[in-house]
Length: 276
Image (cartoon, rainbow, N blue to C red):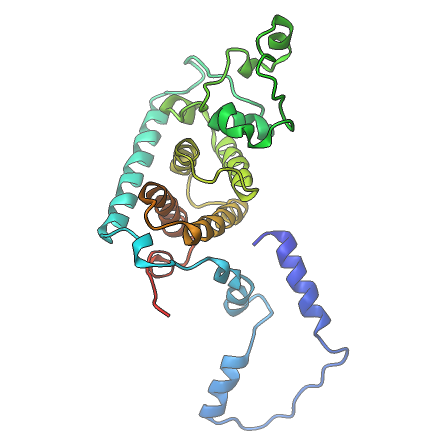
């Protein structure tokens, strides 16, 4: 959870506390009653039990709605993770060999904090037009005039493919870890805000950025990934089981974020259907 959610819980908990605490008298406790006490006790002093209690928001992950929303073969999960690990190793080797380095031809990027610019760079204007009239103009002739082109940032002057730039090896290797984390946060933001959730190009970019994200991840990145995981599991629960292509993309990202990056409580919670 993020800082705002944590502080909100602290405030709510504080309001329930009495003004005066009275220590109970010492008395002998048999094993049966001590077991009950242990079950009812909630630690609040930085212990492991306290940590588990505070992050119990993981219960907000949406369970699998049916068996049809899962892969037919559970070995698909292992294969997905194995292929992902191969890609990570390949990208590491490419980075080590200098691909995307300063001695190569550099691709122009938006500024790191330019959220709307990175959205446009990754998914293209066609998809980003879900926000027409906000962070960029909707006039199709805007970039045709010479003056308009000169006013554009450098990375836009050569135009943007209708479906955005592909997450090529060169682009991924040119990005350092700070930029990888920032762009991942930008794309996650738009997904949480309700943009078209999992189009092929958006999925490709999320998958590619996760492949470049180094472990162990920072707590801020963990919060971003968990927020994204909540949206993905919720969307999966509302999706028709016949939409196999979208389900495959969803389950792939759920596996990587929830299992490989350990944000979802394991396979049993994310990829198992429990009949009620």
